Length: 117
Length: 109
Image: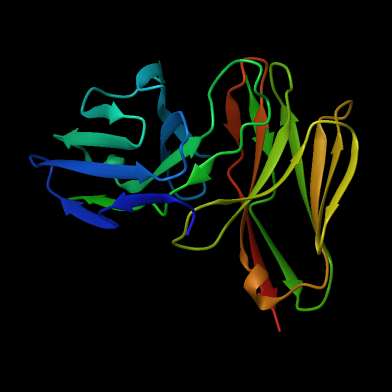
């Protein structure tokens, strides 16, 4: 148990559906992250929240919409996705996301396996 | 551009030793991480190097050479449970984590 939970673990959706992924961390961390993991590709950082404010958005399509209501919860809202969005979506948290914090170990949740039909 | 290179897949025998290499070209360097990820599970932290040299932690060791842009993860006395993907990640000058694609390690009896 890493202290980061994600629901659902598996999700199958059509291109016209709207769904949300949920992440919760019980570690008292101040930063949370969404990653996309596709087979044989590096982890792709999608969004970073530090102290509940979005600090990075790495050119992610608008069909992905993050929400961070408090420092323990992070959501990823999905709508009108494409089949190429099928992947494992990982949530992570770290104590901080401040510049100068080179040792910033990230703790990952188990991921949501998303399939878009 | 920024790049992390590591082999796609490696195979080793139970009880043996295996070395997984990682080379990087990044804009600046502020540390290198190794993570382990079993199939269908979350990546978990293994090691962190920021200075040159070898860090040993039980059966696992990690080495760093900043001048060569090179690191390796050394796994000794391999066990079947070590079958997993091993991810190398570098913190760049902007303190962003740049990830490699991972090395899938297969352990055979």
